[in-house]
Amino acid sequence: MRVHKSFAEQLFNIGNIAVMCLVCMTIIYPFWQQVVLSFSRPEDAQLIGLHLYTTHPTLDSFRRIFMGSTIYKAYYWTIVRTVLGTILTVGVTTMMAYPLAKVYLLGRKFWMWIVVFTMFFSGGLVPTYLLVKNLHLTNTIWSLVLPGLVSAWNIIIIRNFYYSIPDELEESARMDGAHDMYIFVRIIFPLSAPVIATVTLWTLVGNWNAWFDALMYITNNKIKVLQIVLREVLNDANQMSGANPSDVAELAGQQYTPESIKAAILMVVILPIVCVYPFLQKYFVKGIMVGAVKG
Image (cartoon, rainbow, N blue to C red; front, side, top):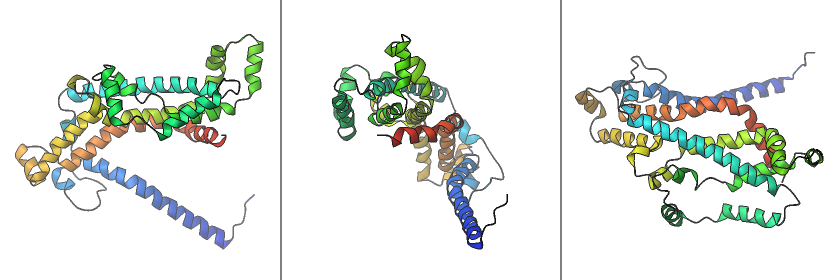
């Protein structure tokens, strides 16, 4: 049945659509401009104003980034760090959150207070570095994974999600002879797919974008992660900014500028996460809402 809408309602809908389109444009346009700049020649990249397209696309900026084998090694170590860090973080966090959601856990409030305490107070940069160094973790992939392995925020989100699972489900499993680990792995973990997907996405993006810890703990060029290598490429490109960038590019016989290099770096870093996000997006809203509402 067709519902008749008043003039005020139609006017509101038109205004609402116009505002939403404007908001979408403010999000999409900066990203599209970087796409165009990454494929632009120096003379196009130096133009002031909107960059909606380029008349002569070139891949020289990407060739500069992928020059040599360093970038491929960096991609390898970044993937290792991201996969290893995400699996361990999700595994340890879910196993810590599960007992904290049980009322029969001895000293549950005390252990929860310890977790919350870390949200307000941390060891600080220097003590953390000294701890990692004394554990002989520097220049290893573990120095990038272990210090940020567990997040108090993630524990609270998953623990709150566990509250929504009926206790009768666990009790019926115990009556059938299931032990705690069996219940957690075969029953609780599969039911937690929405919140686990949410935490996985957070951890995945966090590990992929992290660079400061790699700057502190990694000095061996053989295990540099992607963000550090791209930062070095960007610094090299910025050295051209002291002179006229187009002149420098022309003298060097190259068709890229610092601006196009920055845009190409953005594409190289962001595309893997953009490819993964659609597979986890459907769980994201449900997971964060269910895990955040019940305290």
